[in-house]
Amino acid sequence: MLNDEGKVLLIRHRNGTWVFPKGHVEPGESKADTAVREVEEEAGVQSVAIDPRQTWQTEYVNPRREGRRITWYLLRTNAREAILREAIFPHGGFYPPEEALTMLAFDEDRGTLKQVLRAARRAGLLPDAATGETA
Ligand code: ATP
Image (tube, rainbow, N blue to C red; front, top):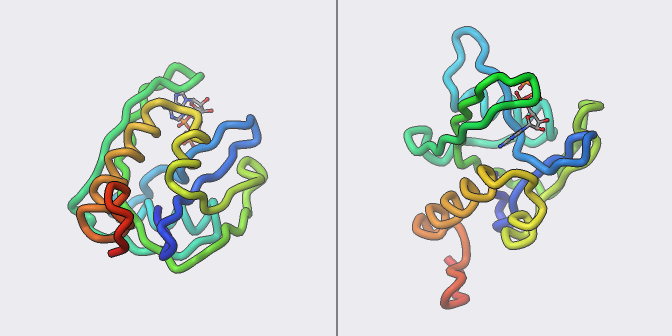
């Protein structure tokens, strides 16, 4: 999730880990719709998928020993702040990409963010880090 300032939305689980919003697909819903809905529910942010065909995957095993495969989308918003609604995620907000990379708790998520940032730069959605030019 990127906002119009090029900042990244992260939420902090009550166990202290910083993550991206995500959740389970509901019947009749596309995965891109799930992403948009979960961001709204968990972070109070309205967004749209830039290109629902472009996705990134991560896999991990959660503490209940369940294998998880997550499909990620690049979402855009004009929001500047998160509105936290769920007790399980008491904090969150938009952070500069470099800071977000240091905050994220899981290697898989850092890897995804790096790839998403590259795609966003290519699409002209972020300033080019190498030249400092703005899109
Ligand atoms: P739900 O099943 O409703 O999505 P959940 O919060 O248990 O609920 P999971 O993604 O299944 O969601 O599990 C999250 C837990 O898995 C986190 O508390 C975290 O400690 C652990 N975990 C381990 N590796 C990762 C990772 N790469 N990304 C996210 N969570 C991870």
